[in-house]
Length: 347
Image 1: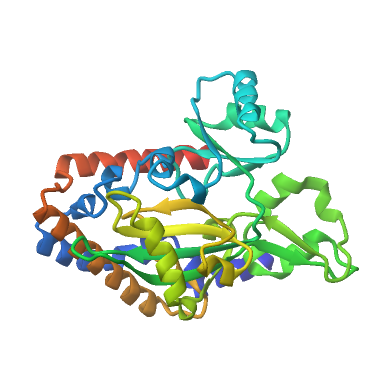
Image 2 (image 1 turned 90 degrees about the horizontal axis):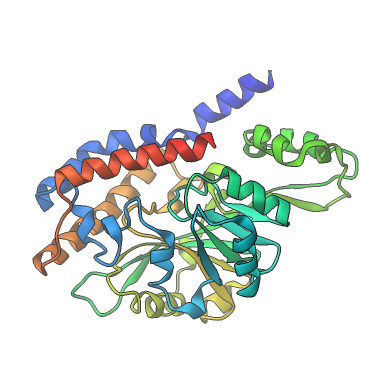
């Protein structure tokens, strides 16, 4: 019965539908913009400072190098062939201590992002990862927001076109139920049960105290159970000035989403006490569309609106001398992206 309820929940809540089912019906919209730009892979010119315009297959380390150091976590690049002991020694010498975050240098949808608590866990991660990866200091801030930023090449200042709060997957105790029972009460967490059982094992039989909150997945990833809440109504002049001030220092960046950790929204708006953990370019989704209150038709309109801005920016940059991706190279990128996603899901 539980399985049937989960299947019905997936079918009736489009936010759980597979990526292709959400985006394939929008192919005619992309085709129209492609005709306007005279290239199917026009997005390459949107962000000249990023490989493939930031659509896919770009090194996260390369992106971090674009961002002023004071706004990002302390980050180290690790070659897959480095020995774990020497790598760990280098990490600790850089002032990054346990626990820290490890994630693929080229990744997607938070696949392979893990919090590492010990030398043994680090050894397992090195054995697991199929590629080069990054190690980052753990940021203490407890809230995450996605900020979509757009700036036309001929404009001095950009704007924020969407703001989403990311609520980490969690449960709250009642003093009687086990963690497993609490997980099964909410379809959002129940859909993650297989992964949670692998991670927590026997700990799921533990009974939380009344009102005790337990974060099951400390990452703001929709594919890992986070709830996305559209808070675009909270966009204000202060926040725009803060984000515009940062993005204007990122050479060749005009379009994309910044994922930011913070504790206090007012401080974030003022440019205080926050850290940018990801910047997604042309491939970044306007993730406020995934708020459960939004209909699929509303989401399609919002995606079309952002694609229109992406197209206009690309055309403007093309006129300024930047190139589109060739059809051959574009197909190769898509094939490489598909292969990477398969590897990350399997390992």
